[in-house]
Amino acid sequence: MADMINVNAHVQNGITQVKLKVRHSMEDGQRTDKKTGKSIAAKFLREIKVMYEGKPVFAANLSTAIAENPFLAFSFSGGVKGEALTINWVENTGKSGSQTAAID
Image (tube, rainbow, N blue to C red; front, side, top):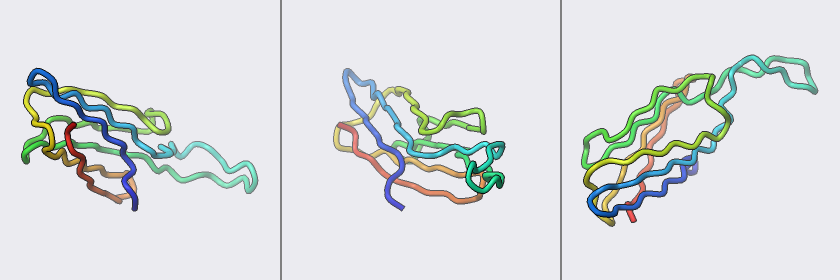
């Protein structure tokens, strides 16, 4: 799967600011397909974790209450331009993924 999270990370004065734009439908399991009338199964991100140098700098436990294509932003002390952040995610379906992004 292509990276589903667009990461924008910048360091300034020792503080790294990170913005995550997630491409995900975040289905809550309560909608029905208008053409078939069948229920659309729940499929949402349950967890997102961001690591820097092997240590967690951000973690979010999500649920069906989060909108489609969520936007998350946070900052942390430290970070060096050119170094990598690792973003891990887990869906309620058990599917998971990981990607890396460089700090600008």
